[in-house]
Length: 492
Image 1 (cartoon, one colour):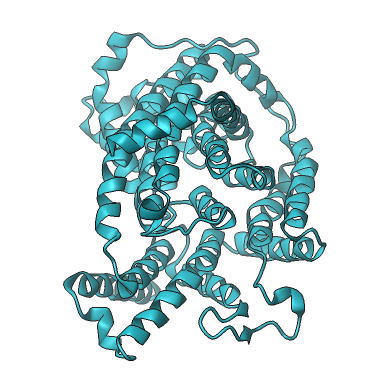
Image 2: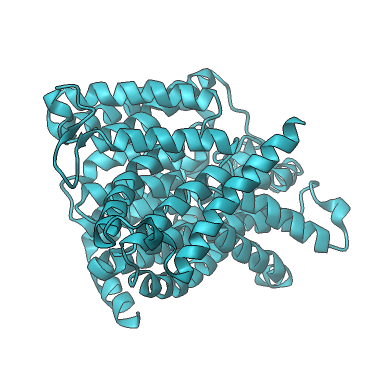
């Protein structure tokens, strides 16, 4: 592990890689600071630019955006009471009151330090867990890999916002989309309806652009023309004193543990963990009535949790090929586009990329602090403008990205189609990430199920032949049974 990290450090310290990571982090802060924009949208827009890059620089750019948006979302939460990201809603509870009483710089300072320490904490646990989990997962057989994929689909369906039924509908739709094209074993065409362009399947990049680019713009058109009123017109970052941070060490520790631990559960971390950590630190406090009035603990805790999520979501993504949120789902798709095979074999076949991503998180966290410390006043200025002026550019880049996948207009029509589907899904509270996950994991699950059956002479018992497989099957059935029971009791 040490050799892998050192090798990754040497690779990333190349000037070109460092510049891309720095730019990506700055863009991430900018995107997070604009309500209505998101990390998945930014990564989708940048995806076409990474087609011609080497794999590591491409992922460093995406990692920078992913890390930067975590802190950027706290800016509008504190200054506008309008969270730039879902996790920023918790920060607004105490950040905005602190800014209202004349300390916006200090509120942003606590957010910056909480995010920085949380990011470092999450990185330490990710670096520890990913190689360990990968070393166990790499010994998996085809049946194990298939069950891991199915368990990932069920977990995401059960834990994302909305009902499990809606999540499962999204997963099934994604699996159906993944079956279009040539059969991976028998090479016969499926669901192409005689259309030649579908022989190679639905263009994956176009589907991603539609779901996370066009659909989001359509959903956020209602935000056009909304004025922004900052609590202050002049702002300088005021970092808290070290003694004040040390006195509140429990906030960072609890935030780091919750952020990494819950962040490792697919579909849960980014939206849920800050609230759980906030509730925990409030219950432990001797003065819980002060929470919500603008105290430092109410800013440090959710921001530490928020950035620790980056390390948590990387654990299942890099070790098992299961994304923790929408951004990591797109990164899994980017791996496919760059010729990598996400899943349990990623560490074995592409360990340099895995360690490069992990080191990129560490350096991006440092860049995040540096940029916020020196240039926060410039990022805050953009909050005064209507962010809807960016929507045409997003649509242009998204359409261009779809076109470049095949250099024809066919992927553009696919992107528009899935953009409309994604918009309908979002308006009906269907989690789009489940559809994308079905598209990504569908081929992997199908191929491994069929290979496992072929090796066992079509004996389905092979899927419960070992104790790990029995545990995974029990977990799958248990989650489904619990959700069915919950649905029946709720209706009654």
